[in-house]
Amino acid sequence: MPTPTLRTERLLLEPYRRTDRDDFVALFTDVEVGRFMGDGPLAPAAAEALFERVFSKVYANDLFDVWAVRSACRFVGHAEIKPTDEVSGHEIVYALAKPAWGGGLGTELVRELLRYGFDCLGLSRIHATVDEQNSASLALLARLGFGHERDVAESNGSITRVLLVDQSSD
Image 1: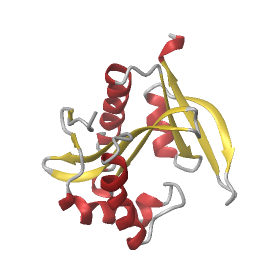
Image 2: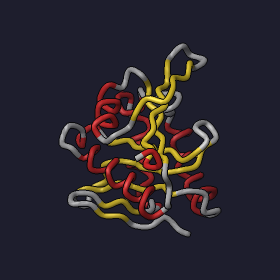
Image 3: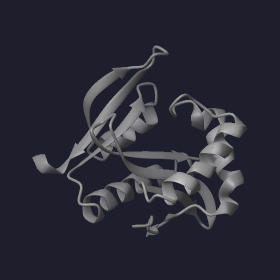
């Protein structure tokens, strides 16, 4: 099933368009945005390659849902919900551009990802993995009911927190 378009009060989550390339690359290469993502901010060529894989692999093979996030018709971020072996289940991934920080859009985005995962995908458990230094995301996820499941020591010495919302335990 193709990635659906989702709407909240202030956000539109829709499949990427080819015209989103520059915004995607800017987001994934931004030092402040990328400091807590995976291996850190990407080089422009790596971000361009990742953007191409969204179309050639993820969308072409209907692997999982990936969205461009917009507010007031402007690109403000990226979101995913995907199965991953790292957590033996589904994980949400999100990133907002700096101009979108601090106004509650992250909370609105994560709420919508949870709603979609639970109500539309029929999941009972949803994970998030967050660098232990990313206090803003850790606080946001805690407010939305994520609990600490375990820590993972990374090869670079950092710690990744594995968080979980489990509706089956309600």
